[in-house]
Each structure stands twice: as structure tokens, then as C-alpha cells.
Image 1 (cartoon, rainbow, N blue to C red):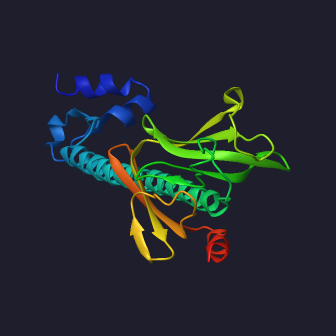
Image 2: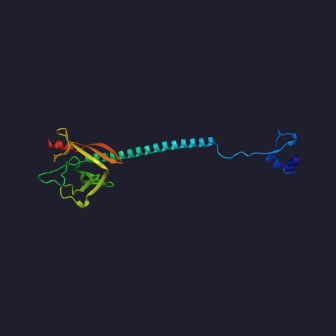
Image 3: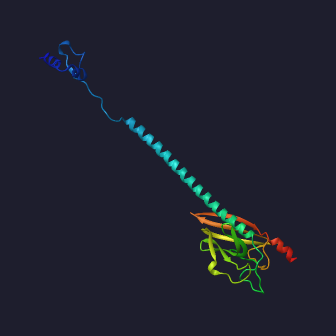
Length: 240
């Protein structure tokens, strides 16, 4: 019976015996027995799982840092763009104020001629404004806050003379939205002093300085402007 099992195994194909059986050389000569070959266990070791978790943590940390930097750059870009818009509105006002003309406003009377009307947050004057591509016309211009916007109102003038304005032709243009404050100050060239109200109706202020504040997305953007009126000095020489 001892030699029966090995002889029966010899009847199996050679390839099957080589792959699945081997003879225990340490066994006794008379009792050698086949030993089944064990296949390796498939799967992940604990070290593989730990390495994978570590890599996942590193990638997650890098993604958090990247997203944080992207949000910061986006906020900086939006803030820079908004500040540029506020500065552009300020530059526009400087240009518009610099072309003020010494002409009576529509609310003037023979006994009270008004060339310029100015308060802390609004003002009026006459000036030549662009009305289309390559064309311009004399307009009475009012700059004042309307709601949360700073608006420019252009009132047509007939022949450049004082008189009733054509209300149907008035043009109201929002200059910038989100305005939280605007303050004008006027320079009296004869005294060299600044005031928040201009009461010298027959004269133009020598210069106007102002501060514009705009709020957006919880941030406040401020821009300072300064305009020197080109015709103020000529008018002062005529008044002497």
C-alpha cells in the first residue's frame, strides 16, 4: 500500500505533476509522499493600504492649497477691476468739469444769472459734450446721485442761450452704480479757499476736488479727483 499512491500519481500527465506536486526529499525512502503546492494569496497588504492613504492625503492637501490660491487670485482680480472702474469714472468727471463754460444756466433770470451751481453732492454747469460719433453740442450738465448710482443728466440748449429746456430730449446716463458717497469741494481763486457750496453764481470755481466711494461685494472702493476749470482764469481776468 505504501507504493500504491506514488504509482497512481505517475499515471497523471507530466505537466500536471510538475506544476501541482513535488516529492518531499526529506521523507524516508520507503514512505515518500506527494505534497500539494500552495498558490500565493492575492490581495493588498497593509503597507499598500497605508501608502495609498498617504498619497490620497497629499493630493487632497495640494488641492486645498491650489483652490485657496485660486480664490485669492480671483478676489484680487475682481477688486483690481472694480478699482479701475471707479478710477475711470473719476477721470471722466475730471474731464467733464474741466470744460465748464461761462454761460447762464436754464434756471437763470435777468436779475439772477447763474453760471455754475454747486453743492456738496451735486452740481450743474454748461459744457460742450459729445452726442455721437464725431459730433458734439452744448449741453447743460447735472451730476448728482440717483438711488445708488451717480448719474449725468444732459439737458439740450437751444442756440446756447438761456431758456426753457427740452425735457423730452434730456439724457440721463448712469455713470457708476453702487455709490455710497460723493463729495464736491470748490476753490475760490480770489481767496484761495475751499468750500462745500458754491455761492458765486456769476463766476466759475477755479478748481473742483471730489471723492467718490463705491461699494461692491462688501468692499469699499475710493477714488479722489481734481479738475481745474480751463475758463475760470479767463473769467477772473474779465471781472477785474
